[in-house]
Image (cartoon, rainbow, N blue to C red; front, top):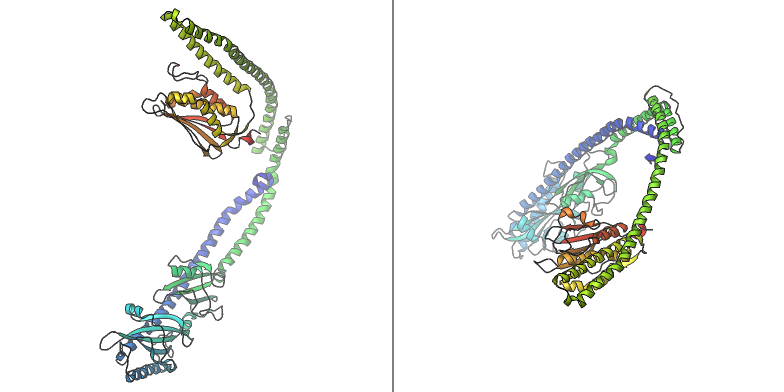
Length: 627
């Protein structure tokens, strides 16, 4: 989009950006710093309040545990027998004792701590025997009831045990329950349990204190089932009915890093802190509305927007004024350039000032005159190059025609020479002396070498001149046909030839790609057969390499020095004498020409004595590229 803008708008926008960037950096730095400071102060305040509430809750629980321990340690209650069989007189004495204690707690505060005992938070005292039977209770209607005695093992391990916030299964009322085991006075074995049920509403007295909190802040407690166990300021009847599964409570119970900004149980964005109480299995949360906390930051942000808007207006006025003075000459140069682009070089831009833009205009006019002169010269050069190109094409065609004709015409005389040499060797061999027989052998070898050379020249000429149709070729079937053609060479040289299965179908010239495989496999057989250290091996395979198919022919022959890797693909380039390895040296040049015509690449990876691997690629999208 920026590239498509005209110079005028780009000039305006650029100046505005350059002007506004420093202001934006300063303004937003102050904005985010102020926000960070407010956030830190708010979190610190919430942390302080939350720690205070946690201290009150822990003090309350510890006081109740101490009361339960003192009550369970009295002589009368410790007369409870560990067998569960108790004399009626003992039970009566225990009932009188807990009623006396309960009456005293109801009429006289037990603490000066303002959140704990205004009258007394103890709502019920009961004593259970070892079987879970209620043998004494300040609510006499519950005497004789029985509950499952599932927490005795916890008492063995912990002593006084805070059972937590729950509904009494017998009355349905909400209590905070403290349990303490009773040990028989004589045997010191467990003989029962003392239960203190404190008013659950006391927690609300602790969490609802507003001191040190903003208007839309609150403190509440969540149990390990994510239930709220204190009243909410914003949701009615929340106790045990409201699930508080937020990022903060999950972090609290899971022991992970706590988020500072999250959505609360109402879906509002809040700043909050939390504290886990391991003994109670509670999470104490203090949070405040984020909108309220960041209100000062929004005021500062609005002030920044007003200032930026005013400066933007002033900058636009300045830019509009300067645009005509600066861009006018530039637009004149632009219009002249468009005329030159259309082929009109006879243009001249008027010079309106003697500043740098004036100098640029003068230089442009000189350039236009030089371009006009260069254009005429270039046209003449192009005409000469075109004539040379046509001459080279004609010469190449004549050269190809000559190579083809000469090679084709030489085949018949060579066949005659080879036939007469064979005739001499078969019919006159006994009449020739040793020297004559050597001459005949040399004639046969020379004829064979010339025949190979001519065949390679014809192949090169055919590849250059003949354009076969492209088609989808199954390379596995193509390689199988080639292997069948050369099976006698494979058997003669005792080569272990393996072809990788499932070779792909490619879009190509079947005949020419066949020449590539044939030349590479023949070379591999020829050079691996000279391996005296191990049995000759040749492998033909492929890999799927992104947007091309990569084929390879690998042998364990004599290898090639890396300094010759690029040379061997030249026409008639040989690294060995013909006595060592037969052939004209044209095979790899044929391979390279075919692969180049298919828009692929060919190369070799080899080291002396370590075999060679020849690679070539065929593009997957060759059908699209070839039209």
